[in-house]
Structures are given as C-alpha cells and as structure tokens.
Length: 90
Ligand SMILES: [Zn+2]
Image (tube, rainbow, N blue to C red):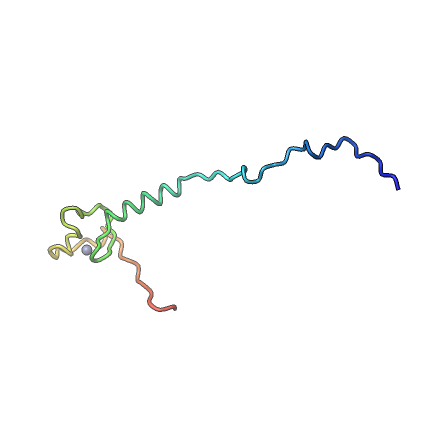
C-alpha cells in the first residue's frame, strides 16, 4: 500500500475558526427598556395597594398613592390593576 501525498494540505497552518470569539451581538434595546420599565414601575407603583399608575407617585414624600394616603379615590383609568396572584401550584 502506497498512499499518494496529500495535495496542498498543511494541517498545522489551517486557520481554525474560533467559536468562542464569534459571540452573537445582541442589541441591548430590550434590556434597557426592561430596566427603564422596572425603574418606572418602582416610581409609579403603590407599595400598599400594588396598583401601577400611569404617572409617577410621590413615593419620596407620601410613600403611597393618594387613595392609600387619605382615601382619595384614584381614577380607574389612571392605573393598571395588579395582576391577581395565583395561589397554590394550580
Ligand atoms: Zn395605593
């Protein structure tokens, strides 16, 4: 058995693609929006009734929404009702 010489092959000189260098580049828009949304939620959600308002609440001075503060009814169109929490493993 006599093998013919491999044509033009230089095994030690072949450029090996680095898989670890080919990281996918994802836009951070969603992450930024999520962070901003979380920040907005923290400023516009009442920690007592857990309703999220469409405007920022004076949490630094009052600490809750007006309804929780003095009973002033909030306009139902000005907040998002909290999602009902499911209990159990359902
Ligand atoms: Zn409240």
